[in-house]
Image (cartoon, rainbow, N blue to C red; front, side, top):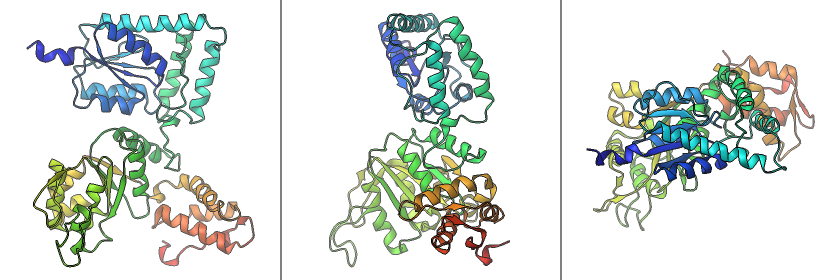
Length: 434
């Protein structure tokens, strides 16, 4: 029985954006025969924990993507048998005390002592207060996203300096979200968009299937692209297929590929979208439009990772992460027998709901600025007058963000040479008013 626990008993995850600090801790822990895994942020730490027995987790006092104590609470609920310690040596409530806690604390002391020796021996290093100010400045500027832009030098660990860091933490915890949670593809700082960004960062490093739900025009493909970019598959293909845009008779061949002569007009073999996405991500837009007969084959692929080209007797294995999207209520459709319930549950391992624009009107100004800046790349840059912006705020937005982009483009044309879009340039569709 003891031999079965070897991998569990000697595994620790180091979660810190500071590569230098991780290196020191790894050296100390490796010398004590620990199996060490590293994570640059909270989402990456959760991905490291998935399916791998781990005895302990060392968390830095700040992470670039998730709030530390909120992350610790989630991890504690998922892995109650694992010990969690802050890198300053303080235990985090919710975990189980490791029988080798003294080794972990010894490694932390060694790493921090090494940091102090290097800092005191190098005159060119900035003072601790300067380091703290610099780091906070980078964080507030939103540079430290996804573990990048963090100083490679660890913060000093004297008692006075630790107290300053600890005093700063309650202020950070009181905020609903950290500024660095923001994702560059998403525009808007409303609470709903911050929560959406947080969900994306949580799921991106994992392999879980994602179902993106939202009204037409909310930006479902943008969210899918963000998940792919933040995943470990980002260097591999991101393949898109709109299930509503392909005729039902051709959709199976488009997804799974076909051999030569498989059907009339198949003059040569063709690779399907699933196979083309090998190693990367397949985004299936409007998954609710997939025919019931094809859903069974899709479910089989999701379960065992194998595909069979149309007209072929052989199967092949592919490594593809699937992200699906729909504007329909698939759960209700499944209950009505219009969509396979088992496929719905397989797709909705991690559902993400994109809020409609009418529920986050506070983002309209930022979105308008974003779209006008994009248009300014190919034509003279324009701005919105206060009256025009108020007119946008009063609209119901049935077409969501896509409708806003089109209205601003139309307004820019109507404004002709004027650098300012006035209220009369904002033409809202009468049928959309309510």
